[in-house]
Image (cartoon, rainbow, N blue to C red):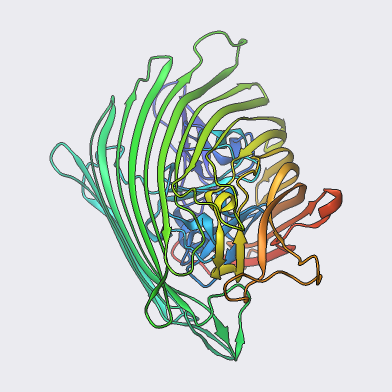
Length: 604
């Protein structure tokens, strides 16, 4: 038997037992952020350091130390991850230069059902305060969730539906304060056995005032939000079955002007966003320890989402509404035969389906309502033989976008239903060159269909201070990428580095329209205020590198002192002859150096 011992503040230790009981297990104190345990990506528990492709997991004390007001701000310091903000709440993660609809943000492996990806002033409706774990998944394992594998995906793990029955009542309460926003949050989780079933209750409340700066307060940056959930399940050795509901409500401001100047990409006069997301889900899992089929997992979810953007004077400028239903079936298995001697492996196959009804109305909207029907079949496989580990995945997606308003206009003369289908695939190979050192390479082919707004918009978009016109003839984005990575772990030292390059065909971007007669930018036809942009496509290339070094300083007088440095860089270019130039909104070179000291009862 192999017995592993772990404790926060100590390096893990493994003891091999032929028989009997271990008399003593000695752990060495360490100040490094150690690899965590992830169970979501490939479906079986393993250390992040054993992963074939690079990724990031924040949980336990590491998550507590980096908690911020949003998911994006919580993970923004990790290698390859930054954030795009339009006020403290309207923050979205940027993974390797990609954001919006190109980066999936999931809650317990399921899409949130909000409209965060449609505009930079929309918030991700997940409060990380009560999360158990936040994962950034890259490589072939991401194909279990979607075809956008070139950047990665973010999965916030709550386990709203309890997966095991606790032996006793337990949980935690956390509080957080911020000086710049003069506010804070409080939240907690309660796990309890209620007879045969297990119950999990979560809740949080976040309140903040306008962001304070040396030049005064920034108006329209306050927030008032709450998040509550309740889950019940019946769990045993053969699996579990249960359901959960969650209600999220938030009211936050989007900044407009400051010091007499209108901020670029803002609502003139300021705006408050009031939203509500109601989610109901059911999950069931059947597990077998002695069978080649490891587990069968089924999940269904329904979401109702509403969002009002209230302009100065109290009227609703834009109102979004969305109903969504999702279903997922995953069969995970382990190999019992057919592999070379000494090899181990397993994988997963599954099917996913989604229906969405998206509506938009109000005085300041040009987004057409549409129904989206999507489905996918996918598979994932991983095999390890000695020092070599290989993982591979493939996914076939089909999607239909049907506009509910096909009325043509001068700027959008053709509005029609679109169908998309594509194969996404990825493979990664990792080699343990010596104890504690691993190198690897991964390659991926990604797919992203155009969003509803990119296809059918024809109106002002105040969040970007633009009049945006869609293009119903857009082709899906298809990309290929290669990733090289290395990881070294030594006592008192941890180093990881990665470099990547991706080439995307038919990359969608907003191109400014120019009046042929005057050579000046075109203005919107109604108010002559906003510059006009039309969705266009070009070939694009993204290349970059990222890394992290953690070094426990060998100072006996200051035990637990560590230096932690991360760096991320990405450059995006349009390659078409008629549109050659840098891609917009690429994050700059980012370097962060942290000096920290961790003891058994405090951290600084």
